[in-house]
Length: 192
Length: 320
Image 1 (cartoon, each protein chain N blue to C red):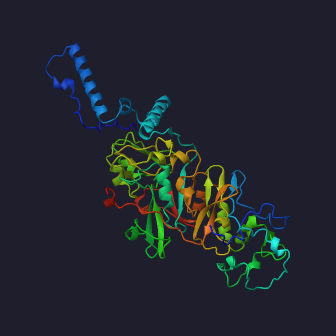
Image 2: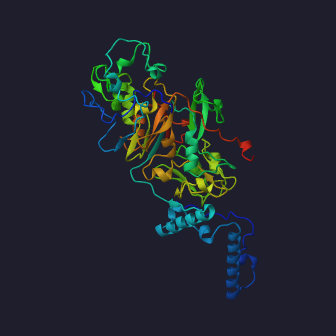
Image 3: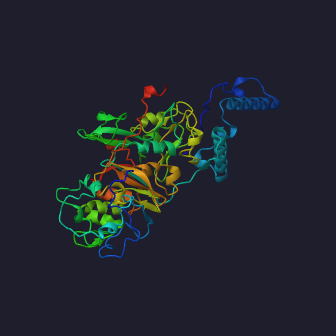
């Protein structure tokens, strides 16, 4: 997968000290089932932590075209008319996201952010209706995150591709639609 | 109900004449009678060896009547046969249904994109014949949004560079694991039946290949091995179940078993795991916390060809 998008994505192990609001809700965990979170797709190389660049830059909260983050800006189609970077990314602490309430959220819990508008999907996802789970129907299962299938900057589902993150297989969204596998042979072709 | 004995299926040698009948009217001495019986048995053995069936196999009891030690011998024989045929070690199990489990399957039509990943994951997992004949247990139909679920506007053979195509939706069909399975009703030898967890299974050792079940199935879910399955040894899945994905001989019917070799051990079916859009849901209908029960309680659910009263355990739904 090319070095696109993904500025948003990822489980930031050790993304810094935390932060109100993050604990609210949590993943789709229930008491008796062992649910394992899949690895989020990787960030674009060298882009995280954001503060490594932004720490030295002046804080400018005015909505504008950004010259540097063209990778995200060129594909941005997530209610683009009404929204821009700082509706989700935090101006004060660049390494986290924020809810509309102002509460800070780790990148690893970005589903809380998605759920602000897509509450029905968040509810279905927690029950295992929306999204995908693999493993055991009666035991340990791995669930995928919103960002495994949807690019937060261009969230309409097109396709996914397998990637390896920290030695673990997971999936990442693509901007290309899937090509179907070959059609079955017609009865008259079976003997050929 | 005891299933009927399997009739003789192989031709070649004519079946032995009844010695009593052949010599009617003639007084038989015990010595002569014993001789004829031995001769008849010998002829039967010769007939059996002519069609590649061992004596043990020919006299095998119905699966449901096998005692544990008999079953173990049968499984060992199949593993031996696999080794001869493919040169590979396989593990053939016969895990039974679990109490308190009834399987249910959900397919989200609003998510399926028709990529056919499930078709080929199934072929690989369940050791289907790759070609000559090509057998697919899952058939993905491309339908028109304008017409809805309508088989007169469905295309199994669609080809595209990218899916989903505009104006189309996709409707995968496989065995619906009916609660009133017409295929089971029609089978003359009791080679197919419904298990307590809901899976309709086939005993390939009892199937005589009459294909009555295929004509009875309203979903086209059963497939026939017109020739010896063409299965490359390197692609053989060695994790097998007697009633599921063990390699089939020529002349028997096969179908989806909800991946019995996986699901009886708690795993998701292969098609659920491979689906890139998460359209496929699987679980225990008797567990109110299961994903499939949540689907049934909160979404718009229907079964295919409801009017036939087959009462499938396979549900289609719209999550949006």
